[in-house]
Image (tube, rainbow, N blue to C red; front, top):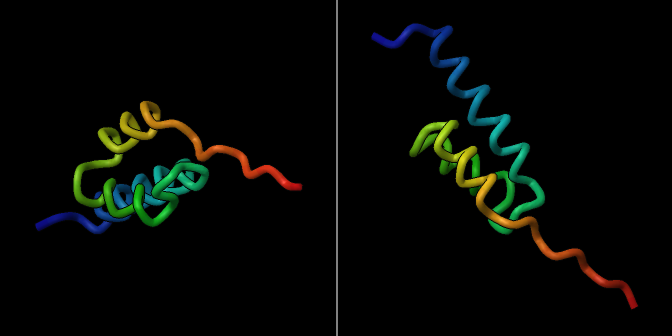
Length: 59
């Protein structure tokens, strides 16, 4: 069975990847779910390869 400490570390990694993805197109939730499904290191690599959302221009 999975140890609670390992599970907590995995979830913390997913949260950190989600936080780093806040300014991306799919946002926190998208990167958090991707990191749950794939793994945080793979999703972090995807995060590095994607661009940030374009800045909104105010008139």
